[in-house]
Length: 408
Image 1 (cartoon, rainbow, N blue to C red):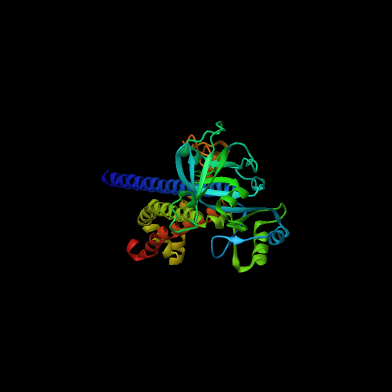
Image 2: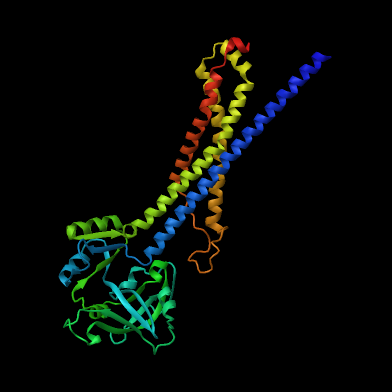
């Protein structure tokens, strides 16, 4: 009777141990699945934010921007501009004069940036993203108009319907005499009719006023000088090809930047944030994978006699290691596959239905933007493989060192 009780107790203890190992393996798989899913979702959201930033900037900035390598401005003439227009792939060329000025509306004052542009400025698909309301022209030579950033209009309390109140623009100038007492010689001034508001991104909304080129040239006394040229690429040509042709044509005296290069610092910051978030979540995934280490370690302890039998039958240590590595890989890869699929489906649902809202009434987009990138799946899979190998190696090594004689 005592012998029967002993055998039954050993059986149930062994069964409980096996069940515990099974539960621990399942928890490990679920942990890997959740961590992998979180990585897929977060990476896709960062991709979507990066695309959103590019789209917002592209609706204000040009596809290509030409600036002087040295200095603030450069001289232009029709012959030189004609040579640029003749380059293959150049569809629209807009001349730009940009500088800081004092803005005044009904006594409210603000130092902003006035951007004088050619009449073809809006032909470059401006303000296709974000908000725009008001007139799409810049007035006439007799009554030049201004398109204001929403932040500028809000700060100055501009009313587009009140056509009798102009926007005054003041720009400092060098006086004819250093000893002058006449304040009118210290600045140039002119007036604009506010005709529209735009809202793209706070950096632009709180600072910029778009005005006609001739108005800005005369107010700032720029003459034939320009601060930049903005170029739209024609259909059928790529931005990279046209950028290369412009650089070859203009030489080292000018820089030619695409939209990403115009805001390289901000985009670099977003990519760095994405990298650090990836590393942080990978570290969390590594912590979750400790369950793989524990489950394989307990399995190696429980199966000592079975391992000893295999070794007695001639199984080499490498085979024992492979068995445990494959067991860890099976747990991790199953969890990773489930996580990748779930992450992909959630991102797909977010793209299609906007499940998670930003919660900002005035936001340009209602829901978190996402973009699924294949390379993210590759990097996540590599991270899971690396973590799995590291978590499984030690238990596999312990299992391969079982003493056959002692266990049998």
